[in-house]
Structure formats: C-alpha cells, structure tokens
Image (cartoon, rainbow, N blue to C red; front, side):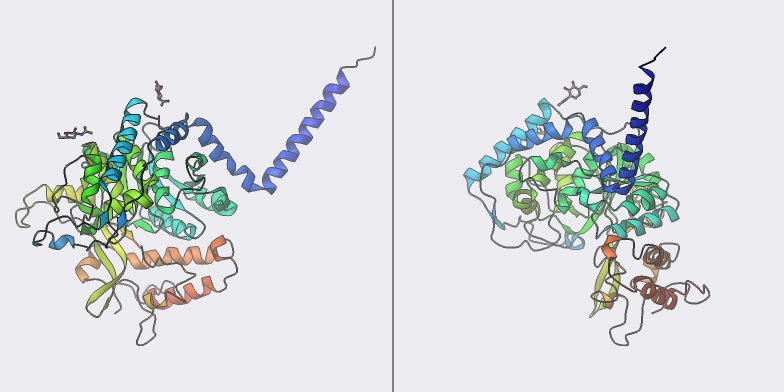
Length: 489
Ligand SMILES: *[C@@H]1O[C@H](CO)[C@@H](O)[C@H](O)[C@H]1NC(C)=O
Ligand SMILES: *[C@@H]1O[C@H](CO)[C@@H](O)[C@H](O)[C@H]1NC(C)=O
C-alpha cells in the first residue's frame, strides 16, 4: 500500500535539520548577530521599564532655555572647608525666574510621575555583582581591572555594559570576559527613543547600566578603577546594610548653585555638609533606592545642559558625580559618604603632586573608625586601609604609554624608566603589598595575550614587547629578586 505521508514528513525533517544547521553556521559566522540576543532578552523581560520611563522623562522635559554660565565656580578644597571664611554660595549661573519656575514644574511632574506609577525595575532579588561600562577604547582597562579583582580574591560576577551593538567584540565578549565570570550586555536601546535618538553619553551610561543591571545590589566601578582588597564584605556590613548607598569623596566641597535648591524647593545645605563625590566607585542597593535612582536618571538625562551645570557650575569634574547624592538627599534617603579623604598617587612636580591615580578607602573600616572617638589614642579601630585605586588620568593604556603619556613612566631628566606612582612610605605601605607590581603584571598579561585581538589596538605594533621591556626593567617580573619592594626612586 502506498503511504503518501511518510515522505513529506521525512523531507520536512531533513529540511528542518538543514535549516537549523545553516542557522548555526550563520550564527557562528556572524557573532555580532548572535550577540544581539542579550540586548533583546533585556528588552523582552524588562516589563516595559524603559518604555514607561521614556514617557515620564518626555513629559518632564524642562520647558525653558538652559542656565547661562557667567563664570566657573572656584574649587574649595575639602581640607580647607572648615577654615574658609567665605561660605556664601557661588553664583555662576544666570537664569530668569520664569525659567526656574518652569524647571520646578518639570521636576515636580517627574517626581509625581514616579510616585503615581513607578516603573518596575527588572533586577533579580538577592543578587550582587559589579557593573561597569566600556566602549572599544576602555575594554583593555576593564580586562586589567577585572584580572586585579580576581587576583585579590573577589568572586562576584561582573556585567560590562556596552553602549551600542557596534562595541561588541566577539573574542572579548564571547571568550575573554566569560572566563573571568563577566559578561557583555548592550545597553537597552529604549532610552534612545526618548529624545535625540542617540545612545546614552559617557556620563549617562553609568546610571543606565546600574538601572539595567540584573543585580539587586551593585558595586559600580569605572573601567579604570580596581580594588586592592576584596570589596565583597562591604555588602554584608554597616554602613551599606544600614544605608544601601555608599559613596566616595572627591577633593572638593560642593559647588552646586542655589538655583538647584530653588528648583527642588529643598534647603541649601551648609558648605561643609557635602563633599563632592568621586563616582569611580559606588555601592548601591536598588530595592532601597529605587526612587532616587530614577531621579538620578532624570538629572543625567537632562544633565548636560541643565543639571550638571546646576550641580557643579563648571568646577572640576562636572558630570554625573553629584547626581546620586542630590537625588538621595531630595528623598531624604540615607547614604554614607566615606570620610577618609581621597589620596593621590603620581609624581611630585615643583612641589605639587601630578597625580595619575586616586586612592579610596575601605567604607567598613572608615565607618568603625569615624564612629569612634576621633583622637587616635582612644580609638580602638585601626585607620582605614585602601580599597580602590582609580587610575583616572592618564589611564595606563599600553598603546599610549610609550608615546603621549611617556612622562608617566620615564624620568624627564634622565629618560630612564621609573615607577608611575610615588607617595609617602606610609601611603605605599598601607596597601600591604606591592600594588604597582601586581597591577603591571596584569597590564603585561593583557598587552601580550590580547595584542592583535583587541580592536582598540588594531594596527599598533610592539605593545607586548614595549610593555615587557618596561616591566622587566622596573619591576623585574621575570627576576623577582630584582626591584622588589617599594619605590625605586
Ligand atoms: C509594577 O508592578 C506592579 C505589580 O506587579 C503593577 O501593579 C504596576 O502596575 C507595575 N507598574 C508599572 C508602571 O507598570
Ligand atoms: C524630607 O524631609 C523634609 C524635612 O523633614 C520634608 O519637609 C520633606 O517633605 C521630605 N521630602 C520628601 C521627598 O519626603
């Protein structure tokens, strides 16, 4: 008997196998395509988060011209804040009262919008991890920082946010980062649809990544910032467990404009209340600070023209740094600002420190130390130890160190190689290990293992060779007896 149904079923099956095989090959051939999956996944599972946020942001767009800068605020060193006699707020912005009123109304619209229908964040409850942002140029730094993180024993996963699909480097995102328990995620494109249809700027990226991250409790790290001791304990101890937001200090007192406080209708704080934030590192609990994170997004979304100048008036490092505490203060939410002052690493030039990195201190030790009697005799707690180094400028990019940033690693008078970071013996000893040597081992690993693979270094020769020559001479990595210990200079 003739069985007409067998053949079509079989050929359908074969067709399906061929089709799936082809799809798999295509997938492997064009990893950029397959890499779009995480982004699409995030879109599908974000429960309309970005869509409802976009609507709220659009409805609360300031209906006025941005403030005009009439001067640049004078920085006030935090160390001098108690002795400075002039404590009147600096006025470097001009804005007519009608515009201030318009901004007040938009701010209220947004705050009410959040209160009425708070967009649901899609993080996974009970998770913890690190978040960073990177484009092609910053990926080498992310890998160096990540290797330092693993070396000091931190096991927390990391999410690396790329601002566009074009930044997805298949070898780095599919192989290198996963081997370090990190993964690339393309920032949700939804925010782009709001106003100018452009990806978030460098500053906006930070808040967008924190909001998009799947982690509930986040340690945000700039690509060029790495821990020198395991930060995991911070999540389970005061002050994080009591406040859910831990920030680190910059060198200066706030230079916010009084206009910002007029817009938000909150009192102008005393000058010595707020130190500016150095936002290279930040601990935040999303469930505890949902409202203020959403308000911080508002300040960043309208940051460049409106809120960045309002919060800094052009002083050093104007950008996203002060938006987190401004938002938390608006909602009276608790936070902890580390008291131990930021310190610089670099070289002395004509009696001042030409720094290329900043040291930030352990919040847990800082909390214990500063909540006990101040004088060191009766304080039972040791003074806080360093927790992070933020290698902000110039970043140690093995591509540029031999050319435009050569002064960092060569003595200007003798031309000999030197250590990039000097400080007092006390500061160097406080790390408890030779942190520069450790750091340079990882720079060397990345320079040699990823030369010819990282997009940022395409077409550049000698990255591994130059780095090896430097590391051998200054740190004697291949000959441990040579040059161990601190400061050769
Ligand atoms: C957020 O989730 C809650 C509970 O699932 C729901 O009632 C609310 O409408 C959601 N909010 C938005 C803005 O979608
Ligand atoms: C914050 O606290 C002040 C003073 O107690 C109060 O007037 C204000 O309404 C509070 N703000 C919010 C957003 O709850």
